[in-house]
Image: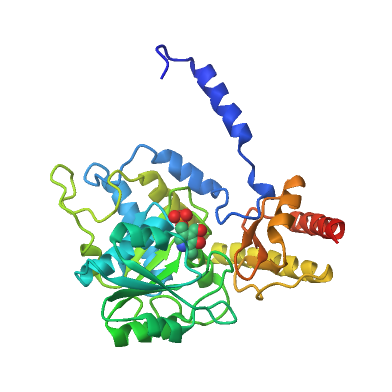
Length: 377
Ligand code: PLP
């Protein structure tokens, strides 16, 4: 650190220089995040000094958190679910599995996750000293329930289903996993970090949330398709005793038994989540999701016109285009300033059609993709 401080102008100049190195979202097709909704930014600014880790000092912010949790509980089919706002999908997944492990009082257990699970589950194995068993996927890239069943033994504390896989946007058969969890007397955690703010607004009637019997907990991320500010995550439990299993005694705070993983927590993120959910309502979110799905279909039909097939018909706004060398195509697209990502198996170019994506950009992208592929042919 320097001895003497800089002027405000100098500090701002330094910040602007670095901000100029950051990318703007418009040509990003690889991210599950998006610029926050303007109402989220206003809410965030209003609450930026508040700390949910000490809720007695910020009772208004704490009430916003409770109301946001209640709105999400209702969205996920169980208005009495309890939970809290986390820093994102990783924290929510860690805490859900910690609750399952503590419920079984196990220190050498295992969990069974789909091979498609987010890499946060590998960290969970390390942090919570659990073996992570990975179940096979079927031809549609959903978890194969019989493979999950084979991997369960007397040391299994939880199984995991994904509602919106990170790579392909696929939804596992949560209702069948729920029955298996009930029969085995173990938890079923649903990772809907991405799907939580997509699936409720899609037409379709499959059971993937608390409406499916046996679902114990759900991860849902407002800072992805919920258009809230970062860090905005959510974790919900069907039974309040599972939330209680996360409590630690805090002698000097205004809350005796906090449940979150982090101590100091942003009330600004809670305000942003509350603001977007109330501002858009179900009608507003449905329009956002409809538009992202329209873009996804436009991307798929445009890709088909240039001879590329999707790995699966998009279930949500994740499009994966099958090709042999997606990493090389990704590098070529980078030269046209497009940021895309790739999948591992099957190999594909992975595109997320987020609220910041426009139909003009989908068309521009497809034209550049066609050029890149022609040059490589
Ligand atoms: N779970 C799923 C399905 C995800 O797609 C992601 C991130 O993309 C996560 C968990 C982790 O979320 P975060 O990056 O907010 O920790």
